[in-house]
Length: 593
Image (cartoon, rainbow, N blue to C red; front, side, top):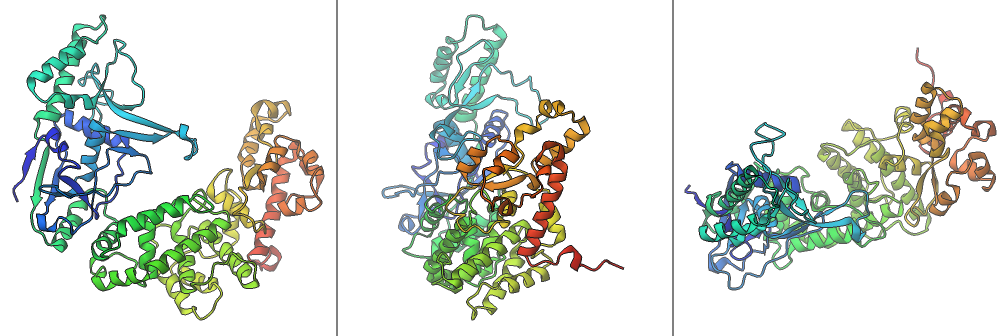
Protein backbone atom coordinates (compact mmCIF):
# COMPACT_ATOMS: atom_id res chain seq x y z
CA UNK A 1 0.00 0.00 0.00
CA UNK A 2 1.72 3.17 -1.18
CA UNK A 3 0.99 6.46 0.51
CA UNK A 4 1.38 9.94 -0.92
CA UNK A 5 1.84 13.13 1.05
CA UNK A 6 1.03 16.76 0.32
CA UNK A 7 0.72 20.08 2.09
CA UNK A 8 -2.45 21.26 3.79
CA UNK A 9 -2.76 24.22 1.40
CA UNK A 10 -2.66 21.87 -1.61
CA UNK A 11 -5.30 19.49 -0.25
CA UNK A 12 -7.46 22.35 1.01
CA UNK A 13 -7.82 23.67 -2.55
CA UNK A 14 -9.40 20.37 -3.58
CA UNK A 15 -12.11 20.25 -0.91
CA UNK A 16 -15.55 20.70 -2.47
CA UNK A 17 -13.81 20.87 -5.87
CA UNK A 18 -12.43 17.36 -6.34
CA UNK A 19 -12.73 15.95 -2.84
CA UNK A 20 -16.18 15.22 -1.37
CA UNK A 21 -17.78 13.00 1.24
CA UNK A 22 -19.70 9.75 0.66
CA UNK A 23 -23.15 9.30 2.16
CA UNK A 24 -21.72 6.71 4.55
CA UNK A 25 -19.82 9.38 6.49
CA UNK A 26 -21.19 10.50 9.82
CA UNK A 27 -21.75 14.21 10.35
CA UNK A 28 -19.16 16.63 11.68
CA UNK A 29 -18.83 16.42 15.47
CA UNK A 30 -15.57 18.10 16.51
CA UNK A 31 -15.55 20.83 19.15
CA UNK A 32 -13.52 24.07 18.94
CA UNK A 33 -11.10 22.58 21.47
CA UNK A 34 -10.41 19.62 19.19
CA UNK A 35 -9.74 21.94 16.24
CA UNK A 36 -7.31 23.97 18.34
CA UNK A 37 -5.50 20.80 19.40
CA UNK A 38 -5.19 19.77 15.74
CA UNK A 39 -3.58 23.09 14.78
CA UNK A 40 -1.30 22.92 17.81
CA UNK A 41 -0.15 19.48 16.66
CA UNK A 42 0.60 20.82 13.18
CA UNK A 43 2.66 23.67 14.61
CA UNK A 44 4.65 21.19 16.70
CA UNK A 45 5.31 18.89 13.73
CA UNK A 46 3.27 16.11 15.29
CA UNK A 47 1.74 13.59 12.86
CA UNK A 48 -2.02 13.96 12.54
CA UNK A 49 -2.74 10.47 11.19
CA UNK A 50 -3.20 9.10 7.72
CA UNK A 51 -6.10 9.69 5.34
CA UNK A 52 -7.98 7.31 3.08
CA UNK A 53 -9.46 8.47 -0.25
CA UNK A 54 -11.56 6.68 -2.87
CA UNK A 55 -11.19 7.81 -6.47
CA UNK A 56 -14.26 7.15 -8.61
CA UNK A 57 -14.04 6.42 -12.27
CA UNK A 58 -16.00 8.83 -14.52
CA UNK A 59 -18.59 6.17 -15.42
CA UNK A 60 -19.39 5.69 -11.70
CA UNK A 61 -19.51 9.36 -10.80
CA UNK A 62 -23.33 9.53 -10.73
CA UNK A 63 -23.89 6.20 -8.96
CA UNK A 64 -23.35 7.53 -5.43
CA UNK A 65 -24.76 10.42 -3.43
CA UNK A 66 -21.91 12.69 -2.36
CA UNK A 67 -21.78 15.62 0.04
CA UNK A 68 -19.80 18.79 0.56
CA UNK A 69 -17.41 19.47 3.40
CA UNK A 70 -18.78 21.96 5.92
CA UNK A 71 -16.96 25.30 5.89
CA UNK A 72 -19.21 27.35 8.16
CA UNK A 73 -20.41 25.25 11.08
CA UNK A 74 -23.24 26.08 13.48
CA UNK A 75 -23.20 24.03 16.65
CA UNK A 76 -25.78 21.24 16.55
CA UNK A 77 -27.60 22.55 13.48
CA UNK A 78 -25.40 22.19 10.39
CA UNK A 79 -25.86 19.30 7.96
CA UNK A 80 -23.61 18.49 5.02
CA UNK A 81 -25.15 19.69 1.77
CA UNK A 82 -25.48 17.31 -1.16
CA UNK A 83 -22.94 18.14 -3.86
CA UNK A 84 -23.49 18.56 -7.60
CA UNK A 85 -20.64 16.70 -9.30
CA UNK A 86 -21.34 17.43 -12.95
CA UNK A 87 -18.07 18.26 -14.64
CA UNK A 88 -15.94 17.25 -11.66
CA UNK A 89 -12.67 15.69 -12.76
CA UNK A 90 -11.07 12.97 -10.65
CA UNK A 91 -13.96 12.83 -8.20
CA UNK A 92 -12.49 11.58 -4.92
CA UNK A 93 -14.41 10.61 -1.79
CA UNK A 94 -12.86 10.82 1.67
CA UNK A 95 -13.34 7.54 3.54
CA UNK A 96 -11.18 8.39 6.56
CA UNK A 97 -10.25 11.91 7.65
CA UNK A 98 -13.48 13.87 7.34
CA UNK A 99 -13.31 15.34 10.87
CA UNK A 100 -9.69 16.49 10.44
CA UNK A 101 -10.16 17.92 6.92
CA UNK A 102 -13.36 19.71 7.93
CA UNK A 103 -11.56 21.14 10.96
CA UNK A 104 -8.75 22.44 8.74
CA UNK A 105 -11.30 23.98 6.38
CA UNK A 106 -13.17 25.68 9.24
CA UNK A 107 -9.97 26.90 10.88
CA UNK A 108 -8.45 28.32 7.69
CA UNK A 109 -11.43 29.40 5.60
CA UNK A 110 -14.58 29.17 7.63
CA UNK A 111 -16.37 29.89 10.89
CA UNK A 112 -17.58 28.01 13.94
CA UNK A 113 -20.84 29.32 15.42
CA UNK A 114 -21.40 28.40 19.07
CA UNK A 115 -24.36 28.79 21.41
CA UNK A 116 -23.92 30.77 24.60
CA UNK A 117 -24.76 28.94 27.80
CA UNK A 118 -28.13 29.46 29.49
CA UNK A 119 -29.75 31.17 26.47
CA UNK A 120 -32.59 29.57 24.51
CA UNK A 121 -31.76 27.90 21.20
CA UNK A 122 -34.28 30.06 19.34
CA UNK A 123 -32.78 33.30 20.68
CA UNK A 124 -30.65 34.97 17.95
CA UNK A 125 -28.49 36.55 20.65
CA UNK A 126 -27.49 33.07 21.82
CA UNK A 127 -25.37 32.44 18.73
CA UNK A 128 -21.83 33.73 18.18
CA UNK A 129 -19.95 33.27 14.88
CA UNK A 130 -16.23 32.83 15.51
CA UNK A 131 -13.03 32.49 13.48
CA UNK A 132 -9.73 30.90 14.45
CA UNK A 133 -6.89 33.18 15.57
CA UNK A 134 -3.28 32.62 16.70
CA UNK A 135 -1.51 34.82 19.25
CA UNK A 136 1.80 35.50 17.51
CA UNK A 137 3.38 36.94 20.67
CA UNK A 138 2.85 33.77 22.73
CA UNK A 139 6.21 32.02 23.14
CA UNK A 140 5.58 28.27 22.58
CA UNK A 141 8.62 27.46 24.72
CA UNK A 142 6.81 28.88 27.75
CA UNK A 143 3.83 26.66 28.53
CA UNK A 144 1.63 26.48 31.59
CA UNK A 145 1.45 22.74 30.99
CA UNK A 146 4.81 21.23 30.18
CA UNK A 147 3.37 17.78 29.43
CA UNK A 148 3.33 16.52 25.89
CA UNK A 149 -0.48 16.72 25.88
CA UNK A 150 -0.51 20.41 26.78
CA UNK A 151 -0.95 23.16 24.21
CA UNK A 152 2.14 25.19 23.34
CA UNK A 153 0.66 27.60 20.79
CA UNK A 154 -2.20 29.90 21.72
CA UNK A 155 -5.01 29.38 19.23
CA UNK A 156 -8.45 30.74 20.03
CA UNK A 157 -11.85 31.03 18.35
CA UNK A 158 -13.11 34.61 18.66
CA UNK A 159 -15.85 36.79 17.20
CA UNK A 160 -14.11 40.08 18.07
CA UNK A 161 -10.35 40.51 17.95
CA UNK A 162 -8.58 42.67 20.56
CA UNK A 163 -6.18 45.29 19.22
CA UNK A 164 -2.45 44.60 19.66
CA UNK A 165 -1.53 45.53 23.24
CA UNK A 166 2.11 44.55 23.54
CA UNK A 167 1.21 41.23 25.18
CA UNK A 168 -0.82 39.63 22.42
CA UNK A 169 -1.18 39.96 18.66
CA UNK A 170 -4.12 37.96 17.37
CA UNK A 171 -3.63 36.85 13.79
CA UNK A 172 -6.50 35.36 11.76
CA UNK A 173 -5.12 31.96 10.81
CA UNK A 174 -6.78 31.96 7.40
CA UNK A 175 -4.69 34.95 6.27
CA UNK A 176 -1.72 32.62 5.89
CA UNK A 177 -3.37 31.28 2.73
CA UNK A 178 -2.54 34.61 1.08
CA UNK A 179 1.15 33.64 1.11
CA UNK A 180 1.65 31.20 -1.76
CA UNK A 181 5.43 31.72 -2.14
CA UNK A 182 8.45 32.43 0.03
CA UNK A 183 8.76 35.94 -1.39
CA UNK A 184 5.11 36.62 -0.76
CA UNK A 185 5.39 35.34 2.80
CA UNK A 186 8.36 37.52 3.76
CA UNK A 187 6.65 40.60 2.34
CA UNK A 188 3.47 39.68 4.19
CA UNK A 189 5.36 39.16 7.46
CA UNK A 190 6.98 42.59 7.20
CA UNK A 191 3.57 44.19 6.69
CA UNK A 192 2.17 42.42 9.75
CA UNK A 193 5.23 43.29 11.82
CA UNK A 194 4.70 46.99 11.13
CA UNK A 195 1.37 46.75 12.96
CA UNK A 196 3.06 45.85 16.25
CA UNK A 197 3.09 48.56 18.97
CA UNK A 198 6.31 50.56 19.32
CA UNK A 199 6.79 49.12 22.79
CA UNK A 200 7.25 45.59 21.41
CA UNK A 201 10.59 44.16 22.52
CA UNK A 202 13.16 42.47 20.31
CA UNK A 203 12.42 39.15 21.98
CA UNK A 204 8.71 39.55 21.25
CA UNK A 205 9.46 40.41 17.62
CA UNK A 206 11.53 37.25 17.36
CA UNK A 207 8.68 35.17 18.81
CA UNK A 208 6.29 36.91 16.42
CA UNK A 209 8.46 36.10 13.40
CA UNK A 210 9.05 32.49 14.44
CA UNK A 211 5.35 31.81 15.08
CA UNK A 212 4.28 33.26 11.74
CA UNK A 213 7.08 31.39 9.96
CA UNK A 214 6.04 28.14 11.63
CA UNK A 215 2.40 28.66 10.64
CA UNK A 216 3.42 29.31 7.03
CA UNK A 217 5.52 26.14 6.95
CA UNK A 218 2.79 24.04 8.61
CA UNK A 219 0.23 25.04 5.99
CA UNK A 220 2.35 25.48 2.85
CA UNK A 221 5.57 23.50 3.26
CA UNK A 222 5.08 20.44 5.47
CA UNK A 223 3.69 17.31 3.83
CA UNK A 224 1.23 16.92 6.70
CA UNK A 225 -1.46 15.05 4.74
CA UNK A 226 -0.36 11.46 4.16
CA UNK A 227 -3.02 9.56 2.23
CA UNK A 228 -3.73 6.36 0.38
CA UNK A 229 -6.09 6.37 -2.62
CA UNK A 230 -8.32 3.35 -3.16
CA UNK A 231 -9.15 2.89 -6.85
CA UNK A 232 -11.25 -0.29 -6.65
CA UNK A 233 -14.86 0.44 -7.72
CA UNK A 234 -16.64 -2.36 -5.85
CA UNK A 235 -18.89 -0.73 -3.24
CA UNK A 236 -18.96 -3.64 -0.80
CA UNK A 237 -15.16 -3.71 -0.69
CA UNK A 238 -15.03 0.04 -0.13
CA UNK A 239 -17.66 -0.20 2.62
CA UNK A 240 -15.60 -2.81 4.44
CA UNK A 241 -12.50 -0.61 4.13
CA UNK A 242 -14.49 2.33 5.44
CA UNK A 243 -15.73 0.43 8.50
CA UNK A 244 -12.26 -0.81 9.43
CA UNK A 245 -10.66 2.58 8.85
CA UNK A 246 -13.18 4.33 11.10
CA UNK A 247 -12.96 1.89 14.01
CA UNK A 248 -9.88 3.72 15.27
CA UNK A 249 -11.59 7.11 15.66
CA UNK A 250 -15.08 7.90 16.90
CA UNK A 251 -16.56 4.42 16.92
CA UNK A 252 -18.81 3.76 13.97
CA UNK A 253 -22.31 3.32 15.34
CA UNK A 254 -24.85 0.80 14.18
CA UNK A 255 -26.93 3.57 12.68
CA UNK A 256 -23.98 4.96 10.71
CA UNK A 257 -23.47 1.58 9.10
CA UNK A 258 -27.13 0.94 8.50
CA UNK A 259 -27.63 4.41 7.08
CA UNK A 260 -24.74 3.89 4.70
CA UNK A 261 -26.17 0.61 3.49
CA UNK A 262 -29.68 2.03 3.16
CA UNK A 263 -28.41 5.03 1.23
CA UNK A 264 -26.59 2.75 -1.18
CA UNK A 265 -29.44 0.27 -1.64
CA UNK A 266 -32.67 2.30 -1.57
CA UNK A 267 -32.33 3.44 -5.14
CA UNK A 268 -34.32 6.54 -6.08
CA UNK A 269 -35.18 7.52 -2.49
CA UNK A 270 -32.31 9.47 -0.94
CA UNK A 271 -32.30 7.76 2.45
CA UNK A 272 -29.84 10.16 4.04
CA UNK A 273 -31.90 13.24 3.19
CA UNK A 274 -35.11 11.43 4.09
CA UNK A 275 -33.88 10.44 7.53
CA UNK A 276 -32.17 13.73 8.35
CA UNK A 277 -35.26 15.68 7.29
CA UNK A 278 -37.44 13.42 9.42
CA UNK A 279 -35.20 13.98 12.45
CA UNK A 280 -35.38 17.76 11.94
CA UNK A 281 -39.17 17.51 11.64
CA UNK A 282 -39.51 15.58 14.92
CA UNK A 283 -37.22 17.97 16.75
CA UNK A 284 -38.52 21.29 15.47
CA UNK A 285 -41.99 21.04 13.92
CA UNK A 286 -44.19 19.25 16.47
CA UNK A 287 -45.98 20.78 19.47
CA UNK A 288 -42.83 20.47 21.62
CA UNK A 289 -39.12 20.67 20.87
CA UNK A 290 -37.47 17.26 20.89
CA UNK A 291 -33.90 15.98 20.71
CA UNK A 292 -33.81 12.81 18.63
CA UNK A 293 -31.00 11.86 16.26
CA UNK A 294 -30.43 9.50 13.35
CA UNK A 295 -29.03 6.87 15.73
CA UNK A 296 -32.42 6.65 17.41
CA UNK A 297 -34.29 6.50 14.10
CA UNK A 298 -32.10 3.75 12.68
CA UNK A 299 -32.20 1.66 15.86
CA UNK A 300 -35.98 1.98 15.80
CA UNK A 301 -35.97 0.79 12.18
CA UNK A 302 -34.21 -2.37 13.32
CA UNK A 303 -36.72 -2.98 16.10
CA UNK A 304 -39.83 -2.28 14.03
CA UNK A 305 -38.58 -4.39 11.11
CA UNK A 306 -38.12 -7.35 13.49
CA UNK A 307 -34.40 -7.45 12.72
CA UNK A 308 -31.70 -8.18 15.31
CA UNK A 309 -31.22 -5.06 17.41
CA UNK A 310 -27.54 -5.75 18.01
CA UNK A 311 -25.43 -4.73 15.03
CA UNK A 312 -23.83 -7.48 12.99
CA UNK A 313 -22.65 -6.84 9.45
CA UNK A 314 -24.29 -10.01 8.13
CA UNK A 315 -27.70 -8.76 9.31
CA UNK A 316 -27.58 -5.84 6.90
CA UNK A 317 -28.12 -7.86 3.77
CA UNK A 318 -30.16 -6.78 0.77
CA UNK A 319 -33.22 -8.71 1.94
CA UNK A 320 -33.31 -6.95 5.32
CA UNK A 321 -32.67 -3.55 3.81
CA UNK A 322 -35.48 -4.10 1.35
CA UNK A 323 -37.72 -4.98 4.30
CA UNK A 324 -36.92 -1.67 6.04
CA UNK A 325 -37.51 0.21 2.80
CA UNK A 326 -40.93 -1.40 2.28
CA UNK A 327 -41.99 -0.45 5.83
CA UNK A 328 -40.44 3.01 5.97
CA UNK A 329 -43.66 5.04 5.68
CA UNK A 330 -45.34 2.94 8.36
CA UNK A 331 -42.25 3.27 10.57
CA UNK A 332 -42.29 7.05 10.20
CA UNK A 333 -45.97 7.16 11.10
CA UNK A 334 -45.47 5.09 14.27
CA UNK A 335 -42.53 7.24 15.42
CA UNK A 336 -44.40 10.49 14.82
CA UNK A 337 -47.52 9.27 16.63
CA UNK A 338 -45.43 8.15 19.60
CA UNK A 339 -43.59 11.47 19.82
CA UNK A 340 -46.87 13.40 19.57
CA UNK A 341 -48.23 11.22 22.37
CA UNK A 342 -45.36 11.79 24.80
CA UNK A 343 -45.35 15.50 23.94
CA UNK A 344 -48.99 15.50 25.05
CA UNK A 345 -47.68 14.17 28.40
CA UNK A 346 -45.31 17.14 28.64
CA UNK A 347 -42.29 14.91 27.93
CA UNK A 348 -39.88 16.45 25.43
CA UNK A 349 -36.17 17.16 24.91
CA UNK A 350 -35.83 18.49 28.45
CA UNK A 351 -37.39 15.49 30.21
CA UNK A 352 -37.03 12.41 27.98
CA UNK A 353 -33.99 11.01 29.75
CA UNK A 354 -33.81 7.83 27.63
CA UNK A 355 -35.02 7.76 24.03
CA UNK A 356 -34.81 3.95 24.03
CA UNK A 357 -37.63 3.84 26.59
CA UNK A 358 -39.90 5.22 23.88
CA UNK A 359 -39.19 2.37 21.45
CA UNK A 360 -41.71 -0.11 22.98
CA UNK A 361 -44.41 2.56 22.68
CA UNK A 362 -43.46 3.08 19.03
CA UNK A 363 -43.54 -0.67 18.37
CA UNK A 364 -47.01 -0.89 19.96
CA UNK A 365 -48.29 1.93 17.73
CA UNK A 366 -46.58 0.30 14.72
CA UNK A 367 -48.61 -2.85 15.39
CA UNK A 368 -51.78 -0.73 15.61
CA UNK A 369 -51.51 1.72 12.66
CA UNK A 370 -54.80 3.53 13.32
CA UNK A 371 -54.18 4.25 17.00
CA UNK A 372 -53.06 7.71 18.19
CA UNK A 373 -54.39 7.78 21.81
CA UNK A 374 -54.93 11.53 21.54
CA UNK A 375 -58.73 11.32 21.58
CA UNK A 376 -61.32 11.06 24.35
CA UNK A 377 -62.84 7.59 23.88
CA UNK A 378 -62.57 5.22 26.88
CA UNK A 379 -59.99 3.14 24.98
CA UNK A 380 -57.85 6.16 24.10
CA UNK A 381 -57.97 7.73 27.56
CA UNK A 382 -57.25 4.49 29.44
CA UNK A 383 -54.36 3.47 27.18
CA UNK A 384 -52.84 6.94 27.09
CA UNK A 385 -52.90 6.88 30.91
CA UNK A 386 -51.44 3.38 30.93
CA UNK A 387 -48.60 4.32 28.59
CA UNK A 388 -47.93 7.56 30.47
CA UNK A 389 -47.55 5.77 33.80
CA UNK A 390 -45.51 2.96 32.25
CA UNK A 391 -43.15 5.37 30.48
CA UNK A 392 -42.69 7.57 33.56
CA UNK A 393 -41.92 4.48 35.62
CA UNK A 394 -39.44 3.19 33.02
CA UNK A 395 -37.68 6.56 32.90
CA UNK A 396 -37.56 6.89 36.69
CA UNK A 397 -36.09 3.39 36.93
CA UNK A 398 -33.60 3.91 34.10
CA UNK A 399 -35.01 0.67 32.72
CA UNK A 400 -33.49 1.23 29.27
CA UNK A 401 -30.16 2.77 30.25
CA UNK A 402 -26.79 1.31 29.31
CA UNK A 403 -26.75 -1.73 27.05
CA UNK A 404 -30.47 -1.96 26.29
CA UNK A 405 -30.46 -4.17 23.18
CA UNK A 406 -31.64 -7.23 25.12
CA UNK A 407 -34.37 -5.21 26.84
CA UNK A 408 -35.59 -3.88 23.48
CA UNK A 409 -35.56 -7.35 21.94
CA UNK A 410 -37.50 -8.89 24.82
CA UNK A 411 -40.08 -6.11 25.10
CA UNK A 412 -40.62 -6.31 21.33
CA UNK A 413 -41.45 -9.98 21.72
CA UNK A 414 -43.90 -9.24 24.54
CA UNK A 415 -45.75 -6.70 22.41
CA UNK A 416 -45.82 -9.00 19.36
CA UNK A 417 -47.21 -11.89 21.43
CA UNK A 418 -50.04 -9.63 22.66
CA UNK A 419 -50.81 -7.96 19.35
CA UNK A 420 -54.29 -9.52 19.26
CA UNK A 421 -55.16 -7.33 22.24
CA UNK A 422 -55.70 -3.63 21.56
CA UNK A 423 -54.53 -2.47 24.98
CA UNK A 424 -50.90 -1.53 25.62
CA UNK A 425 -49.37 -4.67 27.22
CA UNK A 426 -47.55 -2.98 30.08
CA UNK A 427 -47.65 -6.02 32.37
CA UNK A 428 -46.16 -8.31 29.71
CA UNK A 429 -43.46 -5.74 28.95
CA UNK A 430 -42.59 -5.38 32.64
CA UNK A 431 -42.36 -9.16 33.01
CA UNK A 432 -39.74 -9.23 30.26
CA UNK A 433 -37.82 -6.36 31.83
CA UNK A 434 -37.72 -8.19 35.15
CA UNK A 435 -36.40 -11.32 33.42
CA UNK A 436 -33.61 -9.15 31.98
CA UNK A 437 -32.74 -7.99 35.51
CA UNK A 438 -34.12 -4.48 35.06
CA UNK A 439 -36.47 -2.66 37.41
CA UNK A 440 -39.90 -2.56 35.82
CA UNK A 441 -42.05 -0.94 38.48
CA UNK A 442 -41.92 1.54 41.32
CA UNK A 443 -41.44 -0.03 44.73
CA UNK A 444 -40.79 1.39 48.18
CA UNK A 445 -37.07 1.71 47.48
CA UNK A 446 -37.65 3.64 44.25
CA UNK A 447 -40.13 5.94 46.01
CA UNK A 448 -37.53 6.78 48.65
CA UNK A 449 -35.03 7.55 45.90
CA UNK A 450 -37.58 9.81 44.21
CA UNK A 451 -38.05 11.80 47.40
CA UNK A 452 -34.37 12.82 47.12
CA UNK A 453 -34.74 14.20 43.59
CA UNK A 454 -33.83 17.87 43.44
CA UNK A 455 -35.21 21.03 41.85
CA UNK A 456 -34.81 21.64 38.12
CA UNK A 457 -33.74 18.12 37.07
CA UNK A 458 -35.57 16.20 34.29
CA UNK A 459 -36.33 13.24 36.57
CA UNK A 460 -37.77 15.61 39.17
CA UNK A 461 -40.34 16.89 36.69
CA UNK A 462 -41.23 13.31 35.73
CA UNK A 463 -41.65 12.28 39.36
CA UNK A 464 -43.79 15.32 40.14
CA UNK A 465 -45.96 14.84 37.07
CA UNK A 466 -46.69 11.29 38.19
CA UNK A 467 -48.48 12.76 41.24
CA UNK A 468 -51.03 14.67 39.19
CA UNK A 469 -54.01 13.50 37.14
CA UNK A 470 -54.04 16.48 34.76
CA UNK A 471 -54.44 15.62 31.09
CA UNK A 472 -53.19 18.85 29.53
CA UNK A 473 -49.44 18.34 29.97
CA UNK A 474 -48.72 18.94 26.33
CA UNK A 475 -50.61 22.23 26.25
CA UNK A 476 -49.14 23.88 29.33
CA UNK A 477 -45.50 24.39 30.29
CA UNK A 478 -45.68 23.65 34.00
CA UNK A 479 -43.12 25.21 36.34
CA UNK A 480 -41.38 23.47 39.24
CA UNK A 481 -42.23 25.74 42.18
CA UNK A 482 -40.84 25.88 45.72
CA UNK A 483 -43.75 25.73 48.18
CA UNK A 484 -41.62 27.48 50.78
CA UNK A 485 -39.98 30.21 48.64
CA UNK A 486 -36.24 30.13 48.05
CA UNK A 487 -35.89 33.64 49.53
CA UNK A 488 -36.55 32.19 52.98
CA UNK A 489 -33.39 30.09 52.84
CA UNK A 490 -30.74 32.77 52.62
CA UNK A 491 -28.14 32.73 55.38
CA UNK A 492 -29.13 36.23 56.42
CA UNK A 493 -32.83 35.39 56.78
CA UNK A 494 -32.30 32.08 58.58
CA UNK A 495 -29.77 33.64 60.96
CA UNK A 496 -32.35 36.31 61.70
CA UNK A 497 -34.78 33.52 62.57
CA UNK A 498 -32.27 32.28 65.14
CA UNK A 499 -31.36 29.07 63.29
CA UNK A 500 -27.88 27.72 64.03
CA UNK A 501 -25.46 26.57 61.30
CA UNK A 502 -26.44 22.90 61.56
CA UNK A 503 -30.14 23.68 61.18
CA UNK A 504 -29.46 26.00 58.25
CA UNK A 505 -27.52 23.22 56.55
CA UNK A 506 -30.45 20.79 57.00
CA UNK A 507 -32.89 23.38 55.63
CA UNK A 508 -30.75 24.00 52.55
CA UNK A 509 -30.61 20.26 51.86
CA UNK A 510 -34.41 19.97 52.10
CA UNK A 511 -35.26 23.18 50.23
CA UNK A 512 -34.81 21.72 46.72
CA UNK A 513 -36.19 18.25 47.41
CA UNK A 514 -39.50 17.03 46.04
CA UNK A 515 -41.11 17.50 49.46
CA UNK A 516 -40.88 21.26 48.88
CA UNK A 517 -41.79 21.23 45.19
CA UNK A 518 -45.05 21.38 43.24
CA UNK A 519 -46.05 21.96 39.62
CA UNK A 520 -47.84 25.25 38.91
CA UNK A 521 -49.14 26.97 35.82
CA UNK A 522 -46.80 29.79 34.72
CA UNK A 523 -49.21 32.65 35.65
CA UNK A 524 -49.94 30.95 38.97
CA UNK A 525 -46.23 30.59 39.71
CA UNK A 526 -45.66 34.26 38.86
CA UNK A 527 -48.56 35.31 41.09
CA UNK A 528 -47.25 33.21 44.01
CA UNK A 529 -43.69 34.54 43.72
CA UNK A 530 -42.27 34.97 47.25
CA UNK A 531 -45.59 35.15 49.11
CA UNK A 532 -45.96 33.67 52.58
CA UNK A 533 -47.11 30.05 52.26
CA UNK A 534 -50.12 30.33 54.56
CA UNK A 535 -51.32 33.59 52.98
CA UNK A 536 -50.92 32.16 49.49
CA UNK A 537 -52.88 28.98 50.29
CA UNK A 538 -55.70 31.10 51.72
CA UNK A 539 -56.24 32.53 48.22
CA UNK A 540 -56.56 29.10 46.56
CA UNK A 541 -59.63 26.95 45.93
CA UNK A 542 -60.71 24.27 48.39
CA UNK A 543 -59.15 21.47 46.36
CA UNK A 544 -55.71 23.06 45.93
CA UNK A 545 -54.08 21.41 48.94
CA UNK A 546 -55.37 17.95 48.10
CA UNK A 547 -54.30 18.34 44.48
CA UNK A 548 -50.76 19.37 45.45
CA UNK A 549 -50.51 17.04 48.48
CA UNK A 550 -49.96 19.89 50.96
CA UNK A 551 -50.60 18.95 54.62
CA UNK A 552 -53.78 20.43 56.10
CA UNK A 553 -52.12 21.28 59.42
CA UNK A 554 -51.56 25.05 59.27
CA UNK A 555 -49.02 24.91 62.08
CA UNK A 556 -46.62 23.29 59.60
CA UNK A 557 -46.73 26.30 57.28
CA UNK A 558 -44.17 28.29 59.22
CA UNK A 559 -40.45 28.16 58.55
CA UNK A 560 -39.57 26.99 62.05
CA UNK A 561 -41.64 23.85 61.28
CA UNK A 562 -40.08 23.29 57.84
CA UNK A 563 -38.58 19.89 58.65
CA UNK A 564 -41.89 18.65 60.02
CA UNK A 565 -43.65 20.01 56.91
CA UNK A 566 -41.28 18.08 54.62
CA UNK A 567 -41.77 14.86 56.59
CA UNK A 568 -45.56 15.21 56.47
CA UNK A 569 -45.63 16.03 52.76
CA UNK A 570 -43.25 13.22 51.87
CA UNK A 571 -45.61 10.81 53.61
CA UNK A 572 -48.52 12.15 51.52
CA UNK A 573 -46.40 11.66 48.39
CA UNK A 574 -45.60 8.07 49.42
CA UNK A 575 -49.30 7.31 49.90
CA UNK A 576 -50.22 8.94 46.61
CA UNK A 577 -47.64 6.92 44.68
CA UNK A 578 -48.69 3.71 46.39
CA UNK A 579 -52.30 4.37 45.42
CA UNK A 580 -51.45 5.27 41.81
CA UNK A 581 -49.20 2.26 41.36
CA UNK A 582 -51.37 -0.16 43.34
CA UNK A 583 -48.61 -0.84 45.89
CA UNK A 584 -49.46 -2.18 49.36
CA UNK A 585 -49.57 0.32 52.19
CA UNK A 586 -47.13 0.02 55.06
CA UNK A 587 -49.82 -1.60 57.23
CA UNK A 588 -50.35 -4.28 54.57
CA UNK A 589 -46.71 -5.37 54.67
CA UNK A 590 -46.04 -8.03 57.26
CA UNK A 591 -42.90 -7.49 59.31
CA UNK A 592 -40.04 -9.80 58.53
CA UNK A 593 -39.36 -12.57 60.99
